[in-house]
Length: 178
Image (cartoon, rainbow, N blue to C red; front, side, top):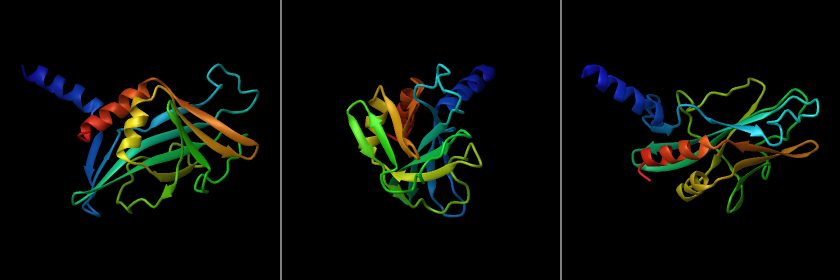
């Protein structure tokens, strides 16, 4: 019976988002265990045309400062060696594309925590936080398409999430009480 309980608890922890108390600020931070990986659109089949594929990573964050909840979307861009992207903090540089439309993301200043909710995947990449609302997070979870469009030196590049992103975002929202 004890083994069954431990196994049950283990299964639950792998699907529940992480929630930690930041000792430096006293804030509770809710995030996924790992960010969602978005693959450069059209590159799944190896159609990179000789260029090294780039990846984008996104992760929702809830900052709870004594009941005052704010939300952000952590975005990390890991460009392939041949790609040059604009600074993702530049206004209009990152756009979220969902089934029901597009949203240009606006950079926010995240709270200064002892530990960031997500760690950058590539040391040469770019990382920023963007403001989101609970309704936008719900739209993201309900959307079949979850893409980012990022400005690059030669136009823009699209990154698409796989089907698991919907489930991860839905679990995140349920764990947050939505």
